[in-house]
Amino acid sequence: MADSGLGGRGRPAADLRASHVDRERVVELLQVAAGEGRLTVDELDERLEAALTARTLRELAVLTADLPASGLLFAGRPAEAARDLIRIDCGSGTARRDGRWLVPRRMEVRVVSGRVVLDLTEAVITMPLLTIDAQVHIGSLRLVTRPGIEVDIDKVAVRSGSARVDAARVPAVPVALRVEVSGRVGSGTLRARPRHRPWKWLVHPPGMAQLTG
Image 1 (cartoon, rainbow, N blue to C red):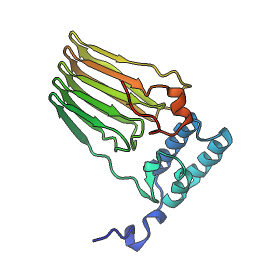
Image 2 (image 1 turned 180 degrees about the vertical axis):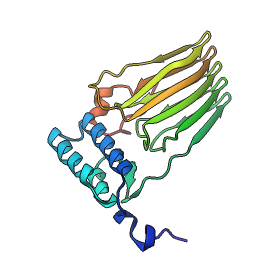
Image 3 (image 1 turned 90 degrees about the horizontal axis):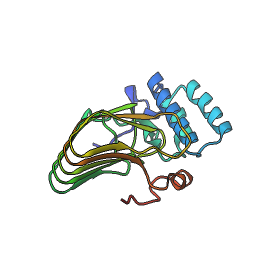
């Protein structure tokens, strides 16, 4: 059966009342967009005031309609619920998540001798924390980040391999997503880094540059 787009009691979903969580999600998106240079200070102030006083999902959707990460509220409908857990088991091949993928609450990543890439530059973020349990043997796990994403690897045990987080050479922006990584690295590598040429990325919308390296 086709989706009618109706909410409770036959009311269009966009006309449903917004919750505090809905408003907070839009506020976070607006702050990140301003940090990326997509909104001026005056535009940010105007939209933040409108977001905090919005009564319906439709009013919130209008505020994010021209932003590339508007997956928080799409087409005037509530955001899709993120999965609780995603498992990636990579032997000797390559596995990746990129584009507009929905970030879950938790991930379990096992890499034997292959390569796993988690590209978060265009990912849809619906909650402030992602926890990753990583088991990297002789392969590699790479996280590609954007401004507003913070990665913590303090709980990762390293044997003979390496684990590192590269700092972004861009102005600080509000944290929209904190990634906490735990687990073990054998003789492989774990690395979190911003997309290459971050200043160019801030000027042009995500997805314009190809991931390399």
